Amino acid sequence: MFKALVTECRQLWRLRGLLAVLARRELGARTAGSAGGWLWVWLPPLLTIAAYYLLFDVVFGMRLGAGAPTARVGTYLVVGMLAWSAFADATQRGMGSLLDAGSLLHKNPLPPGLFPARAVLASGVVFAPLLLALLPLYMGAHQWRAGVWAVLPLLALQALLSFLLAYLLAILAAALRDVAQGVQVLLSLGVFLSPVLFPLTLFPERWRWLLWLNPMTAQVLGYQSALLQGAWPPLAVWLALLAWIGVLAALLSLALARSRDQLVDWL
Image 1 (cartoon, rainbow, N blue to C red):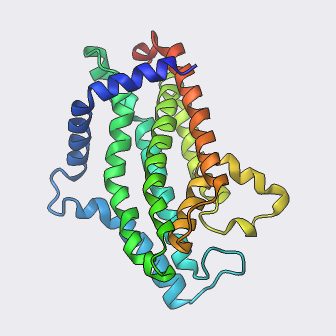
Image 2: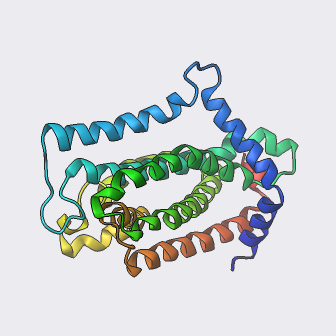
């Protein structure tokens, strides 16, 4: 079932040096000609999370009800929105990566997976430090409990999840350009169908299963458990993450096997 994906991953590992160079060039292209350099890469998400904290925690002093992982609204929003921004950025950039690299793939027999992997890796270089920066900011609130280190495997699983989804969507977008527009809409709506903006307990219980159709629900719950409570995420979070990764891996392997001969022509 996973033969095509395993073959692709082996090629990516063999070309890991080239992948690092491509990711570095993509990051360089984002800051080319800019005096601010990396400041303009990190400033938008930093200003966003600072605005959440100042507006909801400092200015309005808003509080969440019982059952929430923390009482402070701004503190709660920072974790979910930063994780969602990382996911959305990696997914969007990865989805368009094959179309952007079409001319290069026509001229060079490179593994197509290099380009979604490059996009996800470059996005991770931007957002992973921001998520890791939350560790010292949040650890003191729960007496430096060890569960906070669950952020590290969560980051690794999010990178894998983002790569699988981005590569699958990149193949679908190459076959049908409408996919990109549809995914943009889903990403805009998806943040409202996840525990990013509100705790899971506030969503009607009879419809709560809908939230688990969002691949980021388990991921966000994991970050909230680790950062807001200092607790290791429950088993259900890890099982849901592994289930999503397994499903996406199977779908991607099938898409790779079916599109192997036509993919470059679609581009």
